Amino acid sequence: MLAVFRKLNLAGISLESINNSYVNLQSIRWRKPRCVPTAKSKRFRVPQTPILPEDEQIEIKRLFNNYRNHLKSVRRYLINKHSKIEETTHDPEELLKIINQDFERCSAINDKWNAEQKILREQRIAKQLEDDIKFAKQRIELELEKEQQSLERVEEIVRKQKEASVDFITAENIDKAIDQALAQETDYNFAVDINGEKLHGRETRPEKSEKKVALKQ
Image (cartoon, rainbow, N blue to C red; front, side, top):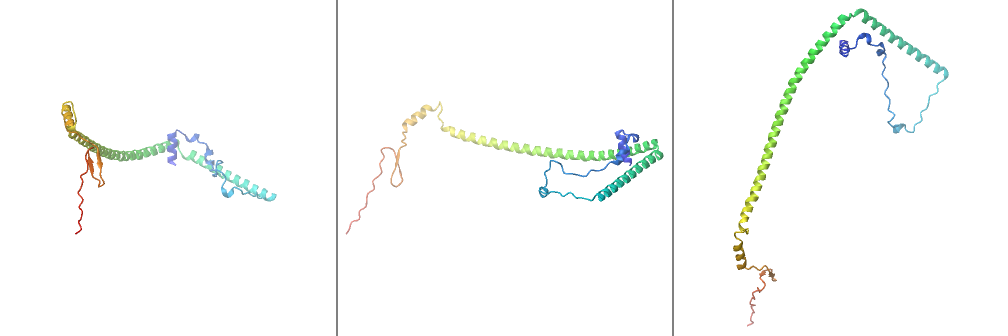
């Protein structure tokens, strides 16, 4: 009850402004929305309307009216009873004092919870920051390792190119390369004999092997 008063006080609602009709609230039975289609088990079912005798209908209506009147009477009695009890037994100043005490107690509990959550939050943030720093260091080390491997590959390529550049023809040794090419004539023509051996040159001929003839004695 005090919790209700505290919420009303926080919302700026007084007891005099509350309508007693809130007690008469009823829950409504859940029904299927209109957008939901008919179930497959009831798609082609034709409901049979029960036919009651006239005297039975009158009796059912009378009983329902009596039930509704009794229920309204009980509700109205309870509303009047509790309204009178609150008006006669509760002093507004005392009620306000109780509400303030309950508010202070709840505020103290809330402050305690906030302090506990602050400690947990700071611990969680510190741990998350430590994990992020560790992850960043690992990524940096991985990137440095990849960069080092890339530099090593580049240096290997440069080294091989330097080794191969010894035989390159440059402006300084072009005359020497021309003289050497003219002095060493190379013929790239070749033929293949029946044994699969290469015969280089245009004028090269295979060596004739002497056939050994067996003499009959």
